[in-house]
Image 1 (cartoon, rainbow, N blue to C red):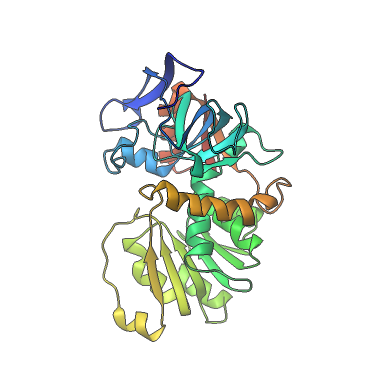
Image 2 (cartoon, one colour):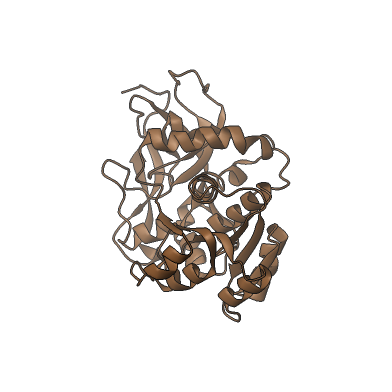
Length: 334
């Protein structure tokens, strides 16, 4: 175990019991000490994710060995020596975690740490890790989106959805997004979506078919799950790929195998949190090579912050997320 320059207590937010936002409470904890291959990060900003609210409700427990403190992405500064030589104490970084982000300090495997993009403030950099790791892996890497294809992104104003819109445009795809109001649809278009569909007022299957001349979408990125499965399959083009990243609409549904086979379609699903440091490191390496050069300009891919809250007000941040009114990332400032 590596000795750090920092010792003593820190502020953190823990889940006192499973329930509503009010079960989040500020506490003092000991500063974590990095194990071999880990770095200590002084957290300046932490992203709030849907997974955090599910963990608070008792529906998404942290993996074995992970911190019980919620928080999957942070931005801050390196606070311990890096034996790998990649970082120096004081370097500005952002990192994806398996937990522990709602605190003044956290630890992260060095493979999961990336330099803060030039020109990005800490609150802005905290919008990146969970969103960009998830969106890139499930839009670009696994379904292999290529230039000229059409992608349908559900939940276009969510953290992952908004990042996926920007990544899709960066890959020269035609981007169609769904959202729950005309105002959110306009926000999707401002983010770069070519088209936006209000799923409360329109049939997204019919709309996508009309927009694509009946061909459908080559890739569908979905976080709804069960209740959308049949319609997602209907909207897929021949050789289409359905990429599932969450089950907000249920984890079970019937699958029409005949349609799947006729379209030669593929259905794939994944989670990021339970992957090993080495597996996340592979995603990080591709991001650093292919996406990080696009970030300093804040043009095609830019930070989208809905609101910020002090760390101790994490309960208010969760209430904001669960209101469904947020657009982009909610961030805690430590």
